[in-house]
Image 1: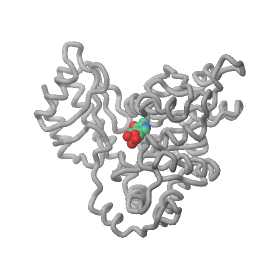
Image 2: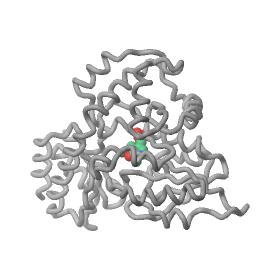
Image 3: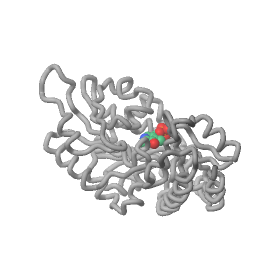
Image 4: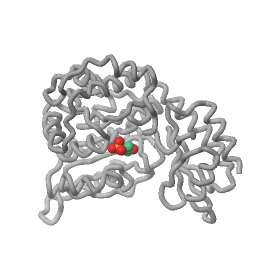
Length: 336
Ligand SMILES: *Cc1c(COP(=O)(O)O)cnc(C)c1O
């Protein structure tokens, strides 16, 4: 099967597994696993941050950030399409006890005016605006990237009203490889960033949250409460170090593959439109007379897995386990 459901389906390569086997281990809840410490610091430094915290999933690192930034009665401003709102089990309310201001935006991206107009005045009727959360690339937006300039404008405004910024950077490396923006400049604009390693970077699991030492100290307490303190987890951290060194630049191959597949899909008779591809996510809109369950089934019969993504929409994601040969097969298979 050619599995294009998500970039989370990647399996660790032989070289990555070898790095995992050789990792020096300790008990990370006692903070003495040297591989975890090295991985956290390497990730943090990449974005110019003081500290990092390794945790099991991107959902957990986002939720930890929300719980540190927010308290009950506070409000986070974010896109209507955001993962923190749509796909984290209602965690904004459940874990942080916070309210959410959803912004229409465009393809999951919001701009500085959206932020300005959605800050509540200091009035007892309103929740307290306390955090702005962006997502780069935007998953529901089809893997689109923010312009660094827009992010800088948002940060400048947030500084002027003393509201911190969080970045859901599950696919931030895809954005950086696509735009050529520097990780350090990106990092300057956020008080916290969550990064996923089990997507395009290909580790079996894991996410790192980065921020100031003080912020990460608070997040470490939250992680423990959520049951996310892991012991000899240096084995997985070693996979993360391997990924940072070997699997970032090659994300460009995934982006090129996505473009080739998207071009072929544009000629498929079932498809009305293909959202322009920027990174490794392709979203297609089917013609009204076709339904997405049938499209998924039709591709499955040809040995290709994709997922429905809301009414009439399909999501297709390229990743490091997809070869050129797979891409050619997909291109042939969508000729109907
Ligand atoms: C995948 C993803 C996450 C994290 O999801 P997990 O399933 O917890 O790994 C967070 N944000 C975005 C935008 C994602 O695509």
